[in-house]
Length: 406
Image (cartoon, rainbow, N blue to C red):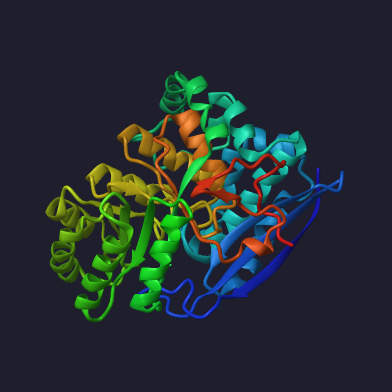
């Protein structure tokens, strides 16, 4: 039973230049942390991610949600978590502050993720193992599929899960093999050209075959120059992604993406405002075969549904600390599987939680094991930090979701 809870406002200033992008020039990586304590002294830890200012507001909202599940047995709670999630996300006064987005939804993510962590710890298994061992019906019981009924009813979700269980035995090999990572830290926005060049060489030496550069400069020529630096340093065989962090207007994106085609980017990420679904569709059609990646700032399953329905995204970067937590992440992964769109999560939490979720996506849903973003800056603050060897995430084996902070 969830006996009590505490909420923590944890903030971590980064080294000069680290974490910077075209919009967030001086980020303070921060977590609104929910800790659920049960009557056996187990602690379920859940995170929501912010860039600093306002983190305290997410913490206040998380306390509101945590109070409403206090006293509930974790197995009973998770057996029907989809209904609980629906009730909490539609609480009348908090819903006005969303709905299903912003501070209140980030807070719900923190609490939801703590529930899943406690559930896995109660069963004594890593979160990925808990999820892949649940039946299709048990998985769907954790989901809120409201507003998705035109695409994904309960029955369709169960069928999709059941169908994709075929071949699961072969896909279990990923546990021993490990999940490939890609390096985002080579090309933070504030790094000099020479830093970017040296970081690319270091990433290749460390076993990474894919990396990402932050773009979105006031001078597009800077972006073009730096993109070619990465391509030259990494080599033609490397996979290189570009990330504008929403900086461009649609006309700007249309122009500069055409210029950037010459260095053969694997994707262009967050090229314009995340609410402009039609704009993403126009851009995706224009720059094909280069794909558009989106989702870091897409707040809920309904907006993802619209992106998929319009064919406006080549990669879905759903983030379990941005949407309503693990539950909504899985609902979105099911939608993406239906549309055969790869899920490559945004890693605002340094990969701790998402290393579990991509294993579930691959093993249980049949998503391609493409790669997972790796950002190393907060690893020292975790009790069980992600382990990367030769550019590959090693499978976590400790019970829970790897989110306990020191």
